[in-house]
Length: 228
Image 1 (cartoon, rainbow, N blue to C red):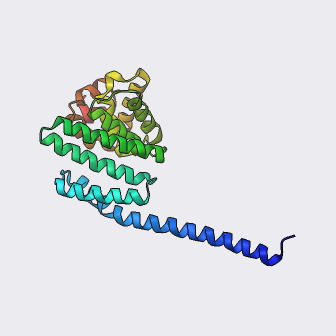
Image 2: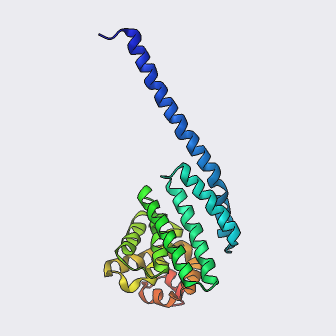
Image 3: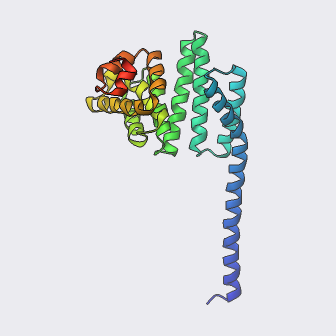
C-alpha cells in the first residue's frame, strides 16, 4: 500500500495542477476581455447612431477583437463582434462602389457568424445574422434556409431576431420552402406586436413592405403596418 505521505503529496500535486490550469484560463479570459471591451463599446455606439464608422476606426477595432480571439478563440461573442465589424467594412466598399470588396468582406462576415453558431449553437442572434448576411449577397442555399429556421426556433420573441429574419426571409422568399415561408410570416406577425415602427422602416428600406402586407393575416398590427 502507498504510504499516507505519498498519497497526500499526490493529492496536493493534483490540486495544484487544477488551480494553475484554472488561473491560466482566467488570465487568458481577462486579457481577452480587455481587448474586446473597446470594439464592444464602439459597436453599441455606432448602432445607436446608425452611422458607418471611418475605415481607420474599423481597422483599429478589428485588430482589437482579433487580439481577443487569439487569447480566447472559442468565445462565440468575439466571433459575432468580428463579423459585425466586417459587415461595416463591407458597407464601406458598397458606398465606394466596389462590388467585389463588398462581397469579399461580407463573405468574411458570413464565416464569422458561421463560427459563432458552431461555438454557441443555441444563440438565435448568430443564426439570424448569418441568414441576413447570406441574403445580402443572394446566397440563398441550404445553409441560408437552415439558419432562418434555427433563428425562428431559438428566438421567436427576440426583437432583433424578428427584424433580421423578416429582412432575410423576404429577400430570399422565392428560394424558401412553403413551410419556411409560413414561419417567416408568423415571425413578422410576432414582431409586429412590439416592433411595428422598426419593422416598417426596415421593410421599406429593402422594398419588401408591400410583399409582407400581401401575406400577413388581417389584424390590428397589419392595419398599422399596411393601412388595411
